[in-house]
Amino acid sequence: MPTIHRLAYRLLGDAFEAEDVCQETFVKFWQAASGWRSGEAKVLTWLCRVATHDCYDRLRRKRPDLPGDLSDRADDRMGAETGMARSQRWDALQAAMMRLPERQRAALSFCYDHALSQREAAKAMNIGEKAYESLLVRGRRTLKTMMQEDDHV
Amino acid sequence: MSDFSTRDGHDNLEGLFAHSRVPAPSANLTARVVTAAMAEPRPQGANDRRLIVWSAVAGLAATLVAGILFFANQPNEAELWAAQADAAGFGDLYEWVGAGTQ
Image (cartoon, rainbow over all chains, first blue to last red):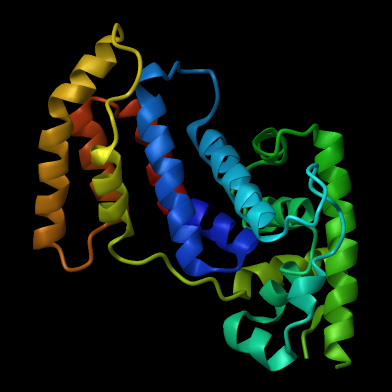
């Protein structure tokens, strides 16, 4: 549960909404459990996939302006918040994470919060390992730029 | 000022994530999830033997978890899920809980 909650928090930036994601994810797991076949997928990978897509859906509902394929555009809305407001709600890393595109945010969380191996993280995101690595490279670069910019504010 | 610019970005991200503040889930989240799960319709797969076990013990498991929550000030999540899994006959399925919450 803490793994799913942390992942959802990284993606949504809201601890209470992350709990809602946990609830929905585990209820779906509960419902799917009777049909589970061992060897089909690791349970944690399955849970992370469901949670990630739930988070994407929630972010999509908040940002209907973005194209349906999950854009790589940075989240300007989050950047519009004042530095003080952001620092009260999030620490510096999370504030920068919230300005990253959703998929980069997810890739970085999988990698640095050590939720899953690279292969499993790619599975959870429904992408290939190469695409996952690419998201990580772009995410690291963008995150570094954002945090360096914040240092100079 | 973050220390991001003073060290290599990749290595430093490990430290930043490790020290980043992430709120802990509410103490009652597990109970809330169990309650929500029990309120849902029965899972699909009527011919699956595990479903029969699942359905038969669901109420017992819910009672068990509620009892643990009642007696424990700080319920151990892994123990809760393990107890739930044992009661429901889904131990293998919940093995990840131990690894994921240590």
